[in-house]
Length: 120
Image (tube, rainbow, N blue to C red):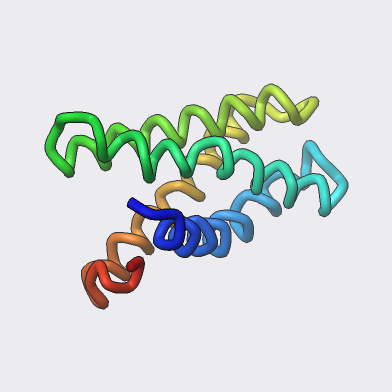
């Protein structure tokens, strides 16, 4: 896989996840720019692994998708708990779960409606 389809998928992921995560962090992190940066870096830490590593594991596509989404959810929630002082595990997990479910669902729907060419 090349970087261009990944970049399209990454930008789509950010477009979906940032509007979810940023407001959910407001109670623990007042600064808007910092909340945006935190959500961006959480995705930057997980998305390349989901895109480039998990597809190379010799398991079926569905299992790869499920495991990669679980991994992204846990990793992003842990990242947020570690870097946002006062953010509870529950709130971080909720933000990560909603954001990852939203971006995964959107990606699956877009591929179903428009085909894989969308990301080529």
